[in-house]
Length: 389
Ligand SMILES: *Cc1c(COP(=O)(O)O)cnc(C)c1O
Image 1 (cartoon, rainbow, N blue to C red):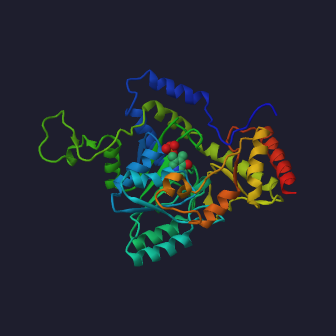
Image 2 (cartoon, protein in one colour; image 1 turned 135 degrees about the horizontal axis):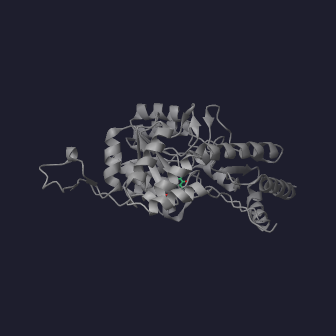
Image 3 (cartoon, helix red, strand yellow; image 1 turned 45 degrees about the vertical axis):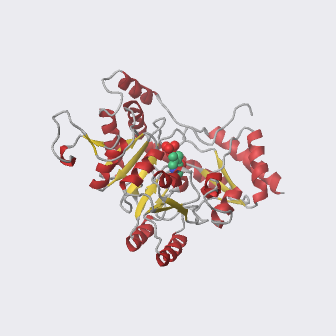
């Protein structure tokens, strides 16, 4: 094969390009009307009250943790089967991080493991302040059950929905925050909808919304209702917290707004391709994530779990040699050297490790042609049959 097929890539059309050019010729390049339009559009799409656009999802997780009051002495729990940013946000705030093992059916945080770990933590007087469920590969976690646990044990829920915009849970869009304090999206080019770099926090809580706006921009507010004491004059703003410059540009927001018009089409194509993978791979020695009855996943990733860990490396190499640029999502976060140095050991989350050792992510993106899809299926199936025999 002459060309290579990546595991994911963005879909940019002429309308996207035109929207970006329009902003470049306008008076505002950052924090102008395109940001507000994009925020309102995503909030409305998801059915959430507020949306705050930021420079990337890592920044979104950071400001969301700060807005939830996470700080030194506090604890954040997340899934080990995620990108490092879901855990790093706790450390940015001076808090500690711990991991809850996954459910091998969905590869999402296991509700049973979480319930068990909470019981133990309560006895030890060391409950988490924030739990970050990650909607792995685009399928929502079991938010209703997680929400019930959050009520019982008094922690906040911050959904890392970096993979999941356009997905639904219990027939409601991911991002509605019906069962969570806040939800984060990523608009990195490999995700469902892109702004180049970008992220967003959604919430229904007015207090969080105000805090997110401040933390996004240096901790500063121009809203007199939030001011302390008398302002110096009509030019005044006040810095109330130590915030950051995590702003998104209007250039990016215009791209995002244009992309959002196609989010349902993107997701529909992804769902179609995943269904075809399921049928094509039904007889192969591997497992694919189960789709929960009340989820309509956005399917950011097509992951497979090979029956034998010994096949993974030869499969990866053979696929790459044939132009199929498979990837692996994810090495459990706590096995990263930085987290090992914080005391985590192999064996900590056996399900996450079991999955990782057998994991491959195959090409999945809306602009993938039927021809390319058929090529990937043929190459993958033939190679696996050979390696497994
Ligand atoms: C991509 C990703 C992030 C970080 O997103 P950026 O926008 O690149 O900062 C966080 N969490 C998960 C699960 C991701 O996949």
